[in-house]
Image (cartoon, rainbow, N blue to C red; front, side, top):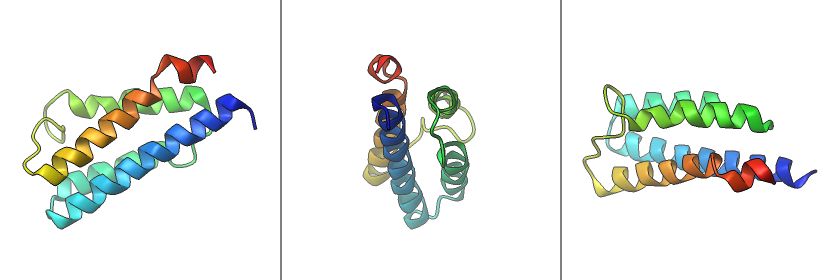
Length: 102
């Protein structure tokens, strides 16, 4: 496995772990909208092994931070704030130049 392939898979797994945390918090808070967003994110990232696909999925997912319905602009609890920040960190890492240039 090439280093680039390993990096793509590691970042994908980091994003999916953050999505799992988001889902768990959303379930605990009975936040149906965020549960649906977590399901959508799973669909976007599960099985990604290609850098171009990872970049496209990451860009699409980051639109959730731009505001509007279903956005992550309004977190109401410490747990949801942590989950949303963790997801953002993982997604931004997916766009990191080091991953693209590995």
